[in-house]
Amino acid sequence: MARRVIIMGAAGRDFHNFLVFFKDNEEYQVVAFTATQIPFISDRTFPASLAGKLYPNGIPIRPEEELKRLIESNRASDVYFSYSDVSSQYVMDKAALVQSAGASYHLLGPGDTMIRSKKPVVAVVATRTGAGKSTMSRKVASIIMKEGLKPVVVRHPMPYGDLTVAVERFATHADLDRFHATIEEREEYEGHIDNGLVVYAGVDYRAILERAEREGDVILWDGGNNDFSFYIPDLTVVVTDPLRVGDESGYYPGQTNLRLADVIVINKVNIASKEAVERLASNCRALNPTAVIVKTRSEAVLDRPELVRRKRVLAVEDGPSVTHGGLSIGAGAVAAKSVGATLVDPRSKAVGSIRTAYDRFPKLGKVLPALGYSDAQLKELERSIDRVECDAVVLGTPSDLTKMIRIKRPVARVRFEAAEVGRPALARLISQMLEGRI
Image (cartoon, rainbow, N blue to C red; front, side):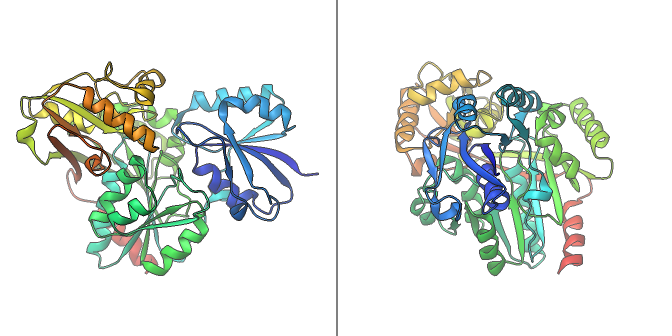
């Protein structure tokens, strides 16, 4: 008799785990997905067109708040935890909830979920959201291109729209509009597109890999939400954050990434204290003594500093970093302060779901999270920005919000680049890996 399964997710890892482990597997019957972390992704259906022969009606997606009731009403025997960037305590709290409802609790690992590629794979992942993974991913891509090879970026999934679209290809800004990309998606895709790279994402990562392999020489896995790679890497680069020492061992699956790493990047050494950097290095060596440790500066560049210098500014930050990533401020605030600006507190001016974010994520400081997962939420973000009295708006989000909403005040954008400290090692390590595969 098939075991009745619920998959706990956030519209990403959960769908991948289903497709590579549960689809067409008659030993299991998946009765529901649950969804959390991201707004507007529950109360949908995982489509029959992707679910396989065992699910002619698809699979319901329900809010995680209903988990205990779902276990009981569906007589579920097993629950598989399938999302990321949560504390180890949180993971075990969910285990206790599931077990108290009578079900068994599981975590699928790399052996059951990673897919092998015909091409070399470099995976860039992190221990926490907001560590600087996106900046490092762009740097790794530039190193591969300097080797005379074409990287194709495959981004960790963010399928917040039409789930029947198994494969999405982004080569131009028009593609972002064509697929109705959210702010979070644009934050990750725009930088690569601006550098002339193609980005793949979607739902079905086997199909995505087949397309990407036809188009490039090297697969660059651009991780998200500090999840581990969907593909078997030839080289794993893990970005860590000295501003959050301890999180590298206290968050799931960030510690998994750290233990899997070939290269550990300690980022933000120009921002963090020397003591924090050394403490993080010691923690990393204890968990993974064989990885190469590389230190990098995270250098912020304001495109229009004259709009910000010594002015009263509103910092609009990368949404994931300052929500479930746990940062109180982000790139916008740091860059603004560096030129003598004063941050205007937007919290009392935020409206709708933007205002609710401050209640859900109490660590949020005097910044506005760039949340835009629906047209309605984009309008709320626009209204929230408009209500703040300030001289200028600093966009710490990598996405150019001016292409999505109307911002009435002068806008400056922050761009981050990574620069290695000491003798460069990343290029040498990537070159050595490629020599063995190409």
